Each structure stands twice: as structure tokens, then as C-alpha cells.
Length: 344
Ligand code: SF4
Image (cartoon, rainbow, N blue to C red; front, side, top):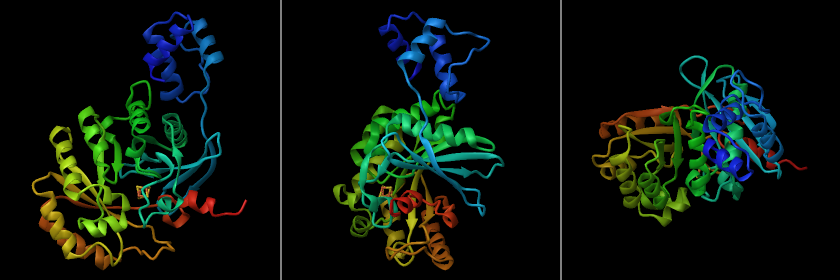
């Protein structure tokens, strides 16, 4: 609940309160991560605390597993929801020492069916609710050996396929009584659900957007990301262009999951150049997970370097994003799928 929702709920219970008390109560649970409303120097009315304790519950997801990759410090969490659903989050060390960001899942499984993705093969079980995403964040944050300064919805699931709950979770992460994360450090990634991108632009949310393009060639993209068949490539880029026109970010981010021998040829670069036109953008290259049984492989250094050289023609920043945690099954979707593959 946001403070104003708590205030409305208390009013329904006939409990008088003031906005600052509600802000304080939310801050205790979310900003400070407490599991009880504890007495503070600035007290809250006893009747309000009693009503909250009796009438509301707040809980954390159960941590089933934590797996740290000592090679790079990525720590993957596997959480269990009350209904037994498994979901993942990853604590990612940032370049600045002792600071981290958290990669969050938005769904249990995913309906998008990207052929190179372990989560895509699980199919969609259900959407995560905002509280579940927030709970995963709070646990990772509270256990971090440093400061968590960002969050990215790029774990299991397509965030815009669960639009309302993801945006609600992001708003709570950015709230001064909530996660206290700067909105510009919260990122939502999408494979390109055009109506949702347009809605997001209309609503004017302050969070960063990543378009996971991965191929600029329509047929290839549709083969790799079947959902791409629903939207024309030009529509996807137009939606991002509209977003760029109203967003505060100087550059839009285009993510490219590089698969060895698949999507790093000159035709990709030429078509991407045409597609982007004058769109201010940066390109993030992301390595695909290495240990795979689906016929895809990680691009080797020569392939990546050739692609990076070829992309210079775009005259835009090209960044190779480290895809960590793979030594310990801590890459995207790997922990949940490894566990689901185990017999009971
Ligand atoms: S890559 Fe993302 S959108 Fe595609 S199937 Fe995997 S989790 Fe879903």
C-alpha cells in the first residue's frame, strides 16, 4: 500500500490518522524493511498501529536458495510464493564498489516464447503481484553487503505483459517511503509490446525503458522472438521514437542478445542503421548464457569484436553488457528452470 491507500483503508476502519503517520508506517515496512511497526521517536497513534497489526498482513517471499558466483559476485535468489510459485532475482555488483542493482522477475515463467531463453521454455504460470516483486527486492536489498541503488525488471517474464503490477512495483521502489531508489535507476525491459510502450509513454512514467530488439531483420526476429510477429518492426521503433520524444533520458536503450552464428552479420547492422534513423540510442550487447541445450551458443570474442566494429557505423554508444552469474546457474532463468527440472 502507498501511504494514501493506507490512509483510505484506515478511514474505512473508522481509525483516525494523519498523512504523516501513514507515511511513517509505510516507511517502517518498506524503506526500513522492518517486519513489525516498532516504536520510534515520532510515535504513531496506538489505535492505528493496532488496526494495522490486526487487519493487514505483510510478508516476505521465502528464500529457497541463494547462489553466489564467486567469479563475479552475482548472487541469484530463488524465492517461493505462498502458492508454491518459484521466482528469481539477482543481486548484481555495480562498477562503484559496494553498490548493487537488483534484477527482478515480473512473471512466473513467460508467455513470449523467445527460443533462446530458458524462461521462455517454461511457459507462463502467472503474473507476479507488485508485493511479490517488492518483497524480492527488499530481501535482496536487506542482505546486500553494501547499498542497492537500482532495480531492473529484466528477469523472468515480459514486464509489459504484467503492466499494472510492474508499474505499481516500480512506483513503490521509487517512493520516498518505499524503496527510495532514484526513478532514473529503475529500468523496465520489453521485447516490444507496442500498445504497452505507447501506454507507458502516454502515462509519462519516469523509469528507463529498454527495448530488447536482438535482430533488425523481421523474419529472423520473429523466429527468435515469436511475439515479434504481432507487431511490425517499424511500429516497434515508432513507439520507441514516441517515447524518446517525451522521455527525460537522452538516449533510448536497445538491447541485443548476441547468439554465435545467428544475429551478428552485416545485414543486421545495415538494417538497424536504417531502422534507427536519427533516434538517439545506445546499443547494449548481451551475451547469451553459455551452458545450453537448445542449439544456440555464445558468440566468441572474434564474432563480438567484429559486430562491435561494424556497429561503429551507427555513431552511437555500443556497450557490451556483462552477463554474469553463469558459472553457478545464476544467469537469466537458469535457477528456476534447473529446479523445475529436478524430480520431486
Ligand atoms: S527473453 Fe524475456 S521475454 Fe523472451 S521468453 Fe525470456 S523472459 Fe520472456
